Length: 323
Image 1 (cartoon, helix red, strand yellow):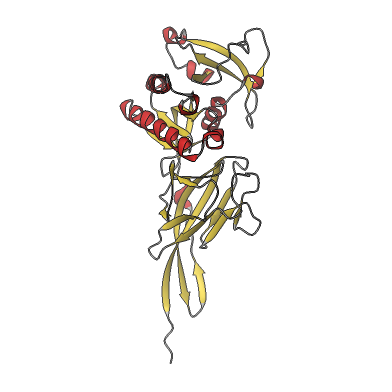
Image 2: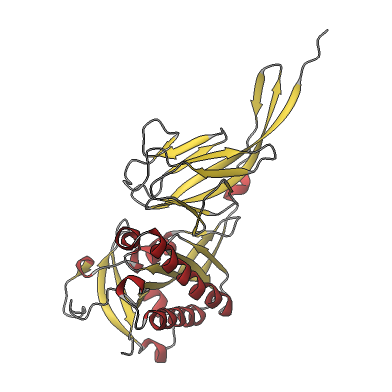
């Protein structure tokens, strides 16, 4: 009687969530490898709306130990993992951020499926319960973003854009540690950070802005580092890997990038001439309410804004910056 061969193949179940880009909110789940991400219809995970993504941009594969790796397939604009451009096959860590083109993807390993192959028959088990064990708590949310980041590489080249991004990392990371951020992550062209107390978040934002302005003083336009920051306060959903999401996070991301044209015109709103496009700190009404009255006097009202994908009008204020 012939002996049946029994092997076990560790095949991680992974989820890729688009957190920023034209397809924001889309999710790709799989435990089949390798797979290719790109703009072409022949790819396994097609992202059609981002013209900065190549037809076949990256390949994701798994090794014999269950590690998941990503490889750039010679794309035009490259692939970044946690703000670092990859030049060779790179292992992905749970919760890391992948950036291709103008699209940001969050990588999550939410279980390891064990495939038992017995006599040619494959049985797969999947336990996704750990992915949904999330906690909730109110936090101060800080969003930091490079001004006109998507245009940097186009205008000044990849090397200059990478240098500016590295300068931002050198400014932000020590500040997050100084003010004891509970969590922070790179978003490709900036950061998301959370703090237990509003005062710590505000102090961190002010110091980051001061350092960015000082670094850019006297430099030519293509080397200047201009930033936008936003502070919000609200309930955060905390995933098992520490990542934050929820409506309060979405509001913070949307409020960070507001423009004058997004504002509802009324008598209390700031004029277009005075509207700060860069090197600014914007805060929501929810955040401002957490500050003592004496600190609220340091802010001026911007106006009421319609935030993309979020219902209602949102009142935003800006920190008065001394010239």
